[in-house]
Image 1: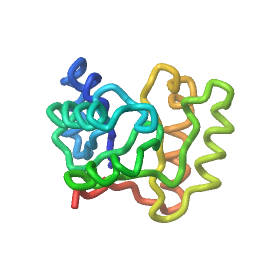
Image 2 (image 1 turned 90 degrees about the horizontal axis):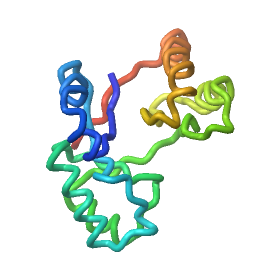
Image 3 (image 1 turned 120 degrees about the vertical axis):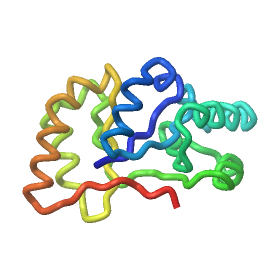
Image 4 (image 1 turned 180 degrees about the vertical axis):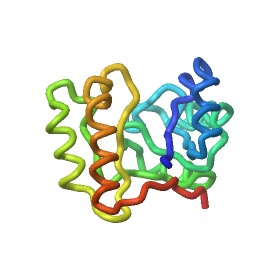
Length: 152
């Protein structure tokens, strides 16, 4: 199982895929409606974007896009959401990183309790397609267990 942090605009465009994620026992989280960087966005615009996403996603989990969020945004957002960051960033979104480098980055840095980030974007797909199945297989063989992030 996994927790998918979804963009509201993508959920609105692909409700059947979103429902498939839920129906298969995965969890979902809010990743904003348009993937706004908190550092570069006015607080009220940021909060509105997060709220708009939650109309599609309906989750108490929030992962800030790019991991960029101002202290003022943390203070306000954490009143309604559990902010989730990560401990292992695969780098799958970087076209300069090969699938093998992406795989090695994940397996070398994953420990019990790690939160690993992969992306489902077109930019990440060349790395994701190769790396994600291989990573899951490797980590399962090492005794790791995959689970969802609880909302409370």
